[in-house]
Length: 112
Length: 115
Image (cartoon, rainbow over all chains, first blue to last red; front, side):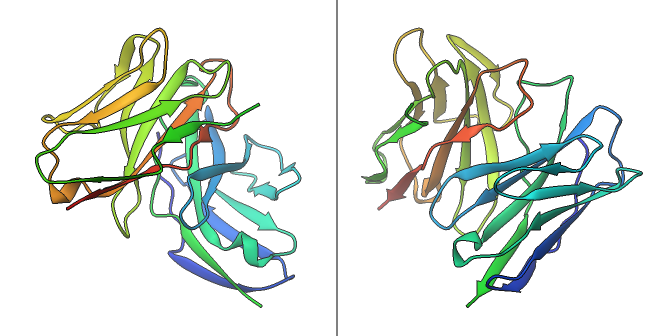
């Protein structure tokens, strides 16, 4: 699977939107973009995924650049419970049962 | 519908003992993945199993570590003759396997401490 690059850490204020960037310049046409997060002392949790179009769900939105070389996870109103490490992962749709490879992720802190 | 169940949540072992970590996947999931997270580090893939088969063990240390996922019962990650460096959080995830590009479901982990 192709590699992703994320900032090591970001800060946000409570109830403000947060934009978490991810670069994946070597993405292939069959790679899906997945986001997971890991809250302190817990296992990772699936957040959202997409291929080309922007995606929304109850947790977040995913904005994908037109050339697909980058994407942004958007938390519309950050809460203290959103403080976590966020991981951007590429998955080849031809390898649907395969392992997830986690990078270092972005550690998001949320200030009250 | 229970999620991925891991037990025990915390495990303390003396150096040289064996550690057995259990993972019950979500109902209907036949694929299991084990990950290790050392203190202050990221998640490292260890092994991927389907029922009665090891599919990918590229992340498993060559010695002392083994994993199984029998036809009946939970998946087991076994660490023989534990050393202090094995102290870590071990996470299990499950998926239905092919045909799904959505999320994998992770358990809450087993925190192994070797004293």
